[in-house]
Structures are given as structure tokens and as C-alpha cells.
Amino acid sequence: MNDILDITLAPSGRDKIDWVRDNMPLLRSLEQEFSADRPFEGVRLALSIHLEAKTAYLCRVLLAGGAEMYVTGSNPLSTQDDVAAALAECGVHVFAKYGVSADEYQAHLRRVIEPAPQIIIDDGGDLVHLIHTEYPHLLPNVIGGCEETTTGILRLHAMAKAGALRFPMVAVNDADCKHLFDNRYGTGQSVWDGINRTTNLIVAGKKVVVAGYGWCGRGVAMRAKGLGAQVIVTEVDPVKALEAYMDGFSVMPMDEAAALGDFFVTVTGCCDVITARHFEKMKDGAILCNAGHFNVEVDVKTLSEMAVEAKTRRKNIVGYRLADGRRINVLAEGRLVNLAAGDGHPAEIMDMSFAIQAMSALYLVRENRTQSMQPGVYPVPWEIDRDVAMRKLHFSGLSIDTLTDRQREYLSSN
Image 1 (cartoon, rainbow, N blue to C red):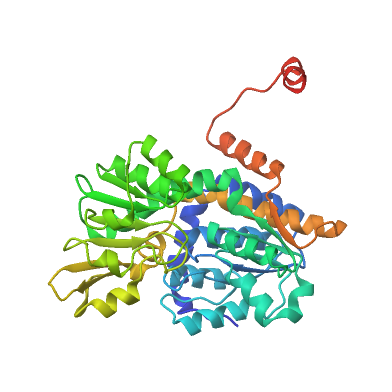
Image 2 (cartoon, rainbow, N blue to C red):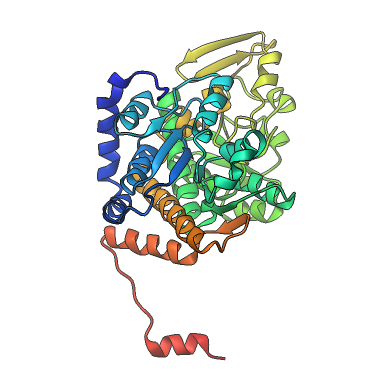
């Protein structure tokens, strides 16, 4: 039994999935291979990723490979109800609706865990956390899992360090063909897509404060610069801060940047990046948004307590008026702005990330047959990264040089 908003929305969802399928040749090639080989036959697979069209196509690819799919979203505001309906229509077990409460969100996570999955594909670590804390009796069924994002991998490493992780997890986010492209180019473009469609304001000439200069922050800052903004970067890592400076951006603490910014984008993966002392310094009309996985980077709760009025000004924009008359605007409740107020990363980018996901899940199934993997956090095998890169080059109409035997000998000699 599914838990979706309305099955009659499926035609619209099918159109969205068909559109991204046309622009995801890597996944199309895997769909053909999986349909022929059926490598996931008899495997129950639980998936929690932002439930929009690209994710839905990944689910269809895994379904074509024989997997029994149990699917939910990884954020209450990123599920697209028509896409969820289209997935349910094609035989996937779907438990997801847009705008659910925290309790409903947790209930949907439980629905995909209760069938005792053998493979878990997670985005942020909620499924892995839940099965360990509430369903420990199901842990022996789990072959392993894959984690999509930086935040989830941080949680996994913490579990592994504490000796609490009970099955192998592949750190998909750390693959070169994921973070070098998805985190940088995907986040860079999709964040500004979300901001621009939501605010309908110009970026050129504005001061943009980017909190965090990891791969996601690099992408957000690069695109802001391309749109004509004056970019300020805040960091806690001296090496990343120096890199931002060398890339041509201003670098300063958030306590200084707070008074200067017109737009603020947090991409740190940490909590309390922008909080009360920063709100007190901000310009009237400042716009705040988050592109880190959880809605803890901008302290919206404290802002709402400081405000004398909170008003929805446009869809996905709440303006908080402070006692001195200044208004601070928060996009998408401080949740992922590129998904809660947009369509997420471009299809061509997610083609690479989800190809890594699908091939890593297959790797786990094959490794399980030899029973060679112990609990822990594992890198994506180099062969998978290379395979995805070579396929992407091929589908992009590109080719590269190959080493001659003499060159190989030279590189491997003393």
C-alpha cells in the first residue's frame, strides 16, 4: 500500500521522468544492462533521496534490474507529488508527500524500513540511523548501503568510530564523479535557480555571502560571481579560506559579513552558522537561504522569536519584521533552497551521481556473494569512478589519449 497524495497526478510525473530520462544517457545505458541481467532480482531496496524526477528515474533503473523498491523522500519540502504518483503507478512502493509534518516524515521512513531491506540508499543518513535505533532486529538482513551526501557521510564516520555501524556503507559522495561535479556544478547552478525563481531579484551588483567553501560552496560562489555579485566567503578552515581568497573572493568572519550581505547562502553542513547576533546586524531586506542538507544552518527558530511579525511575502519566502522595522527574508523555511524552492540539480549532473549510486549498489550485491565486506565506511571502487567518467565522455562525444606501453613502463619505473 502506497502513501502518496493523488494517483491521478501520475501523467504529469511521467512527463517529468521522461524528460530527464532523455537527458540521462548514463542511467539509460545501465537500464538496458540491468534489464538484460536482472542483477537485483529478489533484492529489497529501501531508498530515501529527494523525490523528484531524477530520483524517480534512478528508481526505475533499479526496478528494471529486478529490485523490489521501497521509496520515500529525504526532505519534507522536496517531494514532488506528481512524480511520487508516477513511481507508484509503475510498481514502486512509495511513501512520500510534499509538505508533510515531522511525524509524517518519520512515519514514511519507517514504512520503507519495515519490509526488511537488504540494500539501503540514503541521503543524509536518516534511514541508516532509524534502522540501527528502532529496528535492530532487521540489521542482519542488510547487505549494505550507499550514502549520497556529505552530511550523511559525516554521520556514518561518527557511527563507525563509535563502533555502532553494523553493515558496510559506500561513501558515494566522496567519489570523484560525484562531488567534483554534483557538489560543485550541480549545487552552484541549482541554488541560484532556486533563489532566482523564488525572489525574482537581480544578483548583479549585490553582495553575496557564502558560508562554507567546500565543493558546494565553491560552486555557489563561482556562479554568484558569474551573475555579477560581489562575493564574500566565510570559513572555519584556514586552508579553504585561503583558497577562497586566491580564487578572488573576500574572506571574513560571519560577524563582519552579516552587516554587508544582500544574499546569504549557507553550505557548511553544520548548525548555527547564522544566528541571533548576526540577525541583529543585517540590512533591511536581507535574504537568507540554506543549501546544506539539514535546516539547522540558519537559526530560523530564534529569528521567529526575535520578530514582531512573520509574513509570507511570496511562495517560499517568509519575511520576519524585527522591532526596529528591519525585515529579514528566509527562503524555503531554511531548508535546501535548490530542492524546496526548485527542481534540484540538472539532469546531466545527476546522471553521473546516480550512475555511481546504481553501480555501487550492484557492487554491494556482488561483494555479498563472497561475504568479504565487514561493517564500515568504504570508498567507491576506483573502477566504478573510471567507468562512469569514460561513459560520460563517450555520451558527450569526447575521447581521450591512452598511455602507450612505453609510457606505462616509464611511469611505473624508478
